[in-house]
Length: 414
Image (spheres, helix red, strand yellow):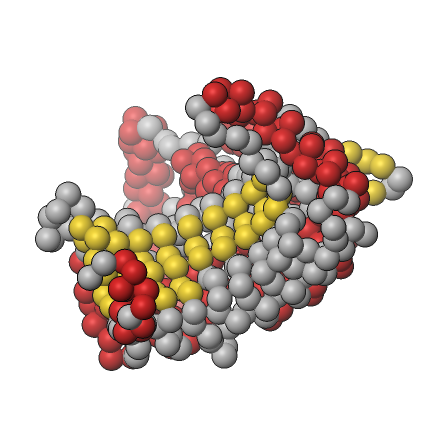
């Protein structure tokens, strides 16, 4: 069947399909699995739950208009965690009443690309997703691309996504095109691209982390400088023998004048014999209570690992924080390289915010692509033209656009 006939034949597109892409044409190595137009109920989900983990080469899993439900998505999330090579998941054209799409963005998720287009997701789903992009203590460190296009995310949802971008330093590509974002939501997104002031909760969390780091450092110094005379002493074998001889002689002397002991004295003598010998230089049992040098070092190392894992990549401990007007200002998110806001409700009132934030970003990082077409402002808007000029110049400097133009590839245009 040729392509024109396929377009005319609606049954070709509406027919349920299961497409499998093999790696090196090996029938036992499935690289990609795509389910389209096929109702995936709980029974089929159980089959997939048993089958997918056995596909060790599976890298991509896609469900397009598969009638997914919240329990089925939850089952798929659990199954995806068992697929060692799975990095790309696409769930498009599926409406979930309980908004459990965010489960795919858990902190321990290894997914790098996630597409959730056309799922009628609103501000509630955006709030859940934003909370898993980052908080003051946790952050998704693996997700590189997130596609939330063709949903129903408004200003409140955009604000939640922006909140998640404040401390996320992994996400490179974000698409929010064809949603319902206006100037208020755009202002929140623009704010995280430039320098922004820390909130009260973020300042408190930063102080806690600095305190934990200082305590970990002091523990390390103390363990390294522990003198040998503080370690528990172990008596030598010769001293033990001499002590035993001295005590035996002392015990033998009064034996000659020993009188028959009463029952009361016998009981006291038995109880005294049961007592453990006093350790040298302290009360009985002190030697067991004192931690050894090895235990101190192991506990210190454990504390250091916990603090280091918490601090790793946390922008709250960024040394480039600045104090201005009684507030702490953190450099904006310069990891995000592409932001797509095409087809929303943004007017020219919020464009100066994007221009200012982009101007704050240095030459080493920041946006390379900012899409603002088909919004509520004319293409010839002066601020919009300036944004295009800044982005084109930045792209040329960072990616050697002159060489690309010689090959017939122009710069990315917003």
